[in-house]
View 1 (cartoon, one colour):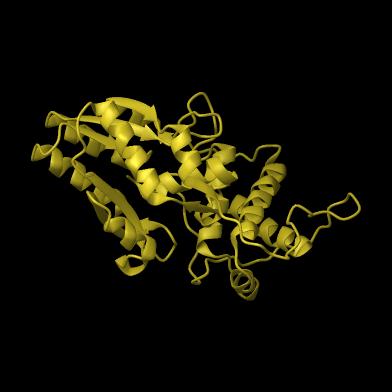
View 2 (cartoon, rainbow, N blue to C red):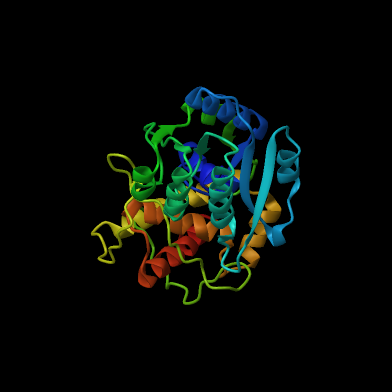
Length: 311
């Protein structure tokens, strides 16, 4: 299980944005449901769950410690890079997949991920006589969310996680707050223009994350296309506004007063989890793997503009 994919995609289904802080998860229930579905798909008993996630300096937090202590669950942690991206997770998944296939420890591997970077590892594992089935998170239309076409072609099958499993175990995080809704971004029916900020960084002062594998826009299969298009669509401003509104609304519903104060105090830096959600969600809307610097700048400027108008 690629937890970055699993929870970000589940967050999109539940809240409309990939901001993981906007959801709360019953991990035990979710893992049990995925195990049951995997056993039904393979018609074999499960050997073990490998849970791949990132942690600061590779040290598990409270929820990760809880997950690692569940029966038959192996916690495998990467770390966060300075840009907020997870490091070492894809490598661990690929190495484990190939090693376990080579050692014939199982006959069927169920992979919960959509990352194109795992394509070669899947093909190498298959050389050793195992089957690899992809299990995708369903989007709002119950279609596979954010799965690379290359990965689909390499795998032996593609199924979606039962929607009820996600809807039961993953819910919106609700934190009471007196802060006004960020939906109110206009005055008198006319949006006010503010001069955009000129410097946007992650909370730790590093440049904003560079997305190399953001999910593609919804289509016949809602998969990652691997294409890049730097021509700005005519409705770019509208798409940016919608993404920012969704992220701000989700953040407000889950943030504590301390988190809100920290966001304001850190301005113009954008916390890495919020910045990543903004970039990922806009990439998905536009169907682009990589956003141009000009588009990123517009997105971050709009974030603070709407934040200032509403809050």
